[in-house]
Length: 428
Image (cartoon, rainbow, N blue to C red; front, top):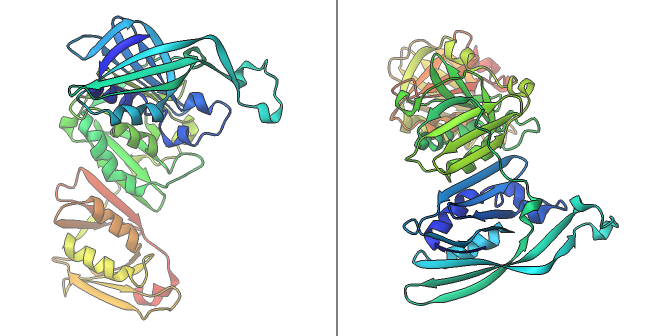
């Protein structure tokens, strides 16, 4: 391989195409094939320049046309497999005004790297060996004639399966690129960091009455965000998707916010495909029986919640912060119709502090209500609902509470009531 490329073009391609190789999953991999998993594959011919990377959970492929105007010139077609993190750091250090030349200095005979030497595995086991085929030679030069030269080990690119994306997978929907980041910002708060079944650390994408929703829950609360009508089109499937939040968060940072995304789901292979101009992404999902463990949002959307009151977001947050100093887990919330107030009483779980009572104005309270809710859970809800007024709604059985903003449609935050004996007499 011999080619030249503008640093800004290469940096953009590496940021997107190498994202699987530099992900946390890849970088902490300690398997015998870690060197390959942590490497990025670069392919260049007379028409296309491609950067791709691959792990068990995520595969990414970014391709752009080879044109002089686009900042890419290929003199000799070929492919490289080089350590992604090291390559990105070096390219980034060269600055956007640089041009980078890349070539392969091949070894006469590939060097065999047996990663299982220490446990006495035979060299004949190809799947436990990595072949070093030479070195990638990198030379940069900027418009001030500042130059730099470096080289990286290059492994056999044929040892890494090519990232293949089937064109037969039926499309699920199109969505504006900017809405992926917005949706995640509104629901990630309700996910767990880790869940061995990957239900509670994932984002569920569901449809209801021709609208598209992103949902997350840890079983104690649920955040539900509806993509605005102008942000979604061509909903062709009602099959729910379940994707690990950490994967979607990574993807939201590399996509072009100005270009639409297409989502597709292959139930047979349990893969989610996200495509954008020049960019193709494949994410692992899970078995249907696991996907079905995530609650159907229809239950929440069709459950009757009656408006209790609307409270200033700033006032409510101040009361909650004060309450959390005594007990961040639970507090008794008492709404008075006559006084039009909310009183929050917190009792220390270990009796370390005296009980705290805070009050704020709650205009037009529909009825007197006493309920025990999670203080931190409600604070999390206020962090994502940015409206000045928070509408508080409750069902007839008082077993949960719903926070909504002014429009009452885009973002809904649900929190379960808590059974805490310390407040039993207070509620009577």
